[in-house]
Length: 269
Image 1: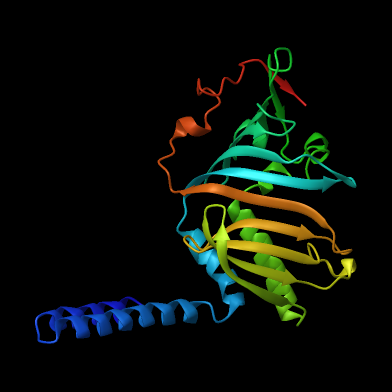
Image 2 (image 1 turned 180 degrees about the vertical axis):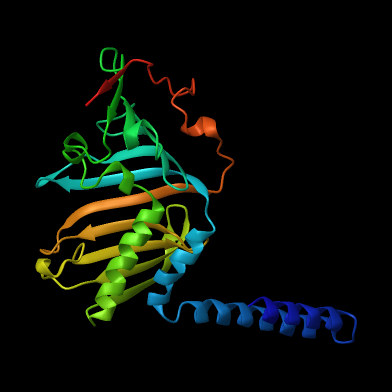
């Protein structure tokens, strides 16, 4: 794409210095437009390649912040929609502060290798906020409120889940990828894809259908809607207001950060 555009721009410069300025300038501008359109179309010829490209796009990301939005069916019941401000840094440092939904005000901090690989939780409220709770990211309490452990939150984990299922299904000749085209999304243009997997639960796939939105700007998945084997929506995850590679510091993942207010008194659960 770069070579096509740079070559065409060079032609424009030569045309400007010659006779017939207006007519040739219009013609050159049309050539640039066609070249750009051709490159965009070529990049999207095979929707399945966009799935593979997510991995390469994420390899350039060391950290990010986002508004993490989720709504899930847990133990057969639809839970309320939740929103949390998320800070993420490789390898898997996670800070969450809920801003909407039943756990509004809750904070979670997880740093691999610290606290015996357990997370720190600060609950809102006068009495519940007197101590920092220390618990496993996949504890029974966590899984009563979510379909996944806290450590499954993150764009990298989502990409891994998608590609693991897509590659297995493609190798078995059981993958269908539907292309919904590029449409306006909450934070810019998004490419809509849908992965369709076998409806047989026993085959070991994560779900029957996965509706995916990929940011046209970053190439990263920014929303995933999960359908079970009865074709019912059981989960909806989104990463809004995504900011890539912000200058996060050690303080962003430190329980002593005064902005977080984690109590020094700790209680294990």
